[in-house]
Length: 106
Image (cartoon, rainbow, N blue to C red; front, side, top):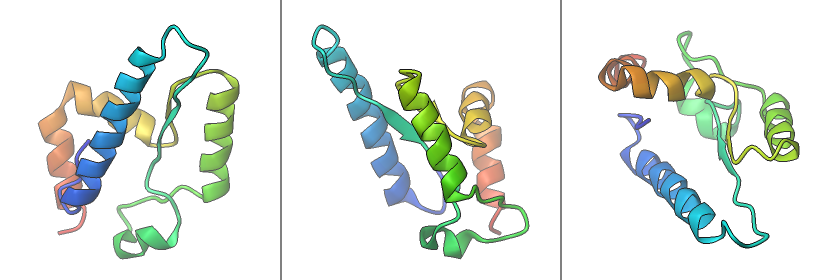
Protein backbone atom coordinates (compact mmCIF):
# COMPACT_ATOMS: atom_id res chain seq x y z
CA UNK A 1 0.00 0.00 0.00
CA UNK A 2 1.52 3.33 -0.96
CA UNK A 3 2.00 5.79 1.86
CA UNK A 4 1.21 9.28 0.53
CA UNK A 5 3.78 11.09 2.66
CA UNK A 6 6.76 9.00 1.55
CA UNK A 7 6.59 8.43 -2.23
CA UNK A 8 10.18 7.21 -2.68
CA UNK A 9 9.94 4.84 0.30
CA UNK A 10 6.62 3.52 -1.04
CA UNK A 11 8.09 3.01 -4.50
CA UNK A 12 11.07 1.17 -3.05
CA UNK A 13 8.80 -1.17 -1.08
CA UNK A 14 6.77 -1.87 -4.25
CA UNK A 15 10.01 -2.64 -6.11
CA UNK A 16 11.09 -5.08 -3.42
CA UNK A 17 7.66 -6.75 -3.39
CA UNK A 18 7.57 -7.20 -7.17
CA UNK A 19 11.17 -8.38 -7.25
CA UNK A 20 10.44 -11.00 -4.58
CA UNK A 21 7.43 -12.23 -6.56
CA UNK A 22 9.39 -12.59 -9.78
CA UNK A 23 12.36 -14.23 -8.06
CA UNK A 24 10.01 -16.79 -6.50
CA UNK A 25 8.75 -17.58 -9.99
CA UNK A 26 12.25 -17.91 -11.43
CA UNK A 27 13.46 -20.12 -8.58
CA UNK A 28 10.31 -22.26 -8.27
CA UNK A 29 12.11 -25.36 -9.60
CA UNK A 30 15.29 -24.77 -7.62
CA UNK A 31 16.01 -25.19 -3.94
CA UNK A 32 15.94 -21.42 -3.38
CA UNK A 33 13.31 -19.70 -1.26
CA UNK A 34 12.59 -15.99 -1.42
CA UNK A 35 10.98 -14.57 1.71
CA UNK A 36 9.51 -11.10 2.09
CA UNK A 37 8.66 -9.19 5.23
CA UNK A 38 5.79 -6.70 5.08
CA UNK A 39 6.59 -4.77 8.24
CA UNK A 40 4.13 -2.54 10.03
CA UNK A 41 5.08 0.89 11.32
CA UNK A 42 7.86 -0.22 13.66
CA UNK A 43 9.24 1.50 16.75
CA UNK A 44 12.61 2.53 15.31
CA UNK A 45 14.38 5.83 14.70
CA UNK A 46 13.02 5.76 11.13
CA UNK A 47 9.51 6.21 12.56
CA UNK A 48 10.38 9.27 14.68
CA UNK A 49 8.66 11.65 12.24
CA UNK A 50 5.48 9.57 12.32
CA UNK A 51 4.83 9.36 16.04
CA UNK A 52 1.28 10.55 16.54
CA UNK A 53 -1.61 9.34 18.71
CA UNK A 54 -3.17 7.82 15.55
CA UNK A 55 -0.14 5.67 14.72
CA UNK A 56 0.61 2.57 16.77
CA UNK A 57 4.21 1.45 16.34
CA UNK A 58 5.06 -2.23 16.71
CA UNK A 59 7.98 -3.08 19.02
CA UNK A 60 10.95 -4.38 17.04
CA UNK A 61 11.23 -7.63 19.02
CA UNK A 62 7.60 -8.53 18.27
CA UNK A 63 8.04 -7.78 14.57
CA UNK A 64 11.19 -9.92 14.45
CA UNK A 65 9.38 -12.76 16.28
CA UNK A 66 6.61 -12.73 13.65
CA UNK A 67 9.23 -12.72 10.88
CA UNK A 68 11.07 -15.71 12.39
CA UNK A 69 7.77 -17.57 12.83
CA UNK A 70 6.97 -16.92 9.15
CA UNK A 71 10.38 -18.20 8.08
CA UNK A 72 9.94 -21.35 10.16
CA UNK A 73 6.49 -21.86 8.61
CA UNK A 74 7.80 -21.39 5.04
CA UNK A 75 5.46 -18.43 4.59
CA UNK A 76 6.96 -16.44 1.73
CA UNK A 77 5.06 -13.19 2.28
CA UNK A 78 5.16 -12.42 5.99
CA UNK A 79 2.83 -9.62 7.02
CA UNK A 80 3.57 -8.60 10.60
CA UNK A 81 1.25 -6.77 12.97
CA UNK A 82 -1.16 -4.31 11.41
CA UNK A 83 0.31 -5.04 7.96
CA UNK A 84 -2.03 -8.06 7.83
CA UNK A 85 -5.08 -5.81 8.06
CA UNK A 86 -3.57 -3.19 5.76
CA UNK A 87 -2.88 -5.80 3.07
CA UNK A 88 -6.49 -6.99 3.31
CA UNK A 89 -7.87 -3.43 3.25
CA UNK A 90 -5.62 -2.46 0.32
CA UNK A 91 -7.41 -5.09 -1.73
CA UNK A 92 -10.92 -4.49 -0.36
CA UNK A 93 -10.96 -0.67 -0.32
CA UNK A 94 -7.65 0.72 -1.66
CA UNK A 95 -8.77 4.33 -2.08
CA UNK A 96 -10.31 4.42 1.40
CA UNK A 97 -7.09 3.11 2.97
CA UNK A 98 -4.95 5.52 0.94
CA UNK A 99 -7.03 8.46 2.16
CA UNK A 100 -6.89 7.23 5.76
CA UNK A 101 -3.10 7.06 5.56
CA UNK A 102 -2.96 10.52 3.99
CA UNK A 103 -5.17 12.00 6.70
CA UNK A 104 -3.29 10.35 9.59
CA UNK A 105 -0.63 13.07 9.48
CA UNK A 106 -2.58 16.16 8.48
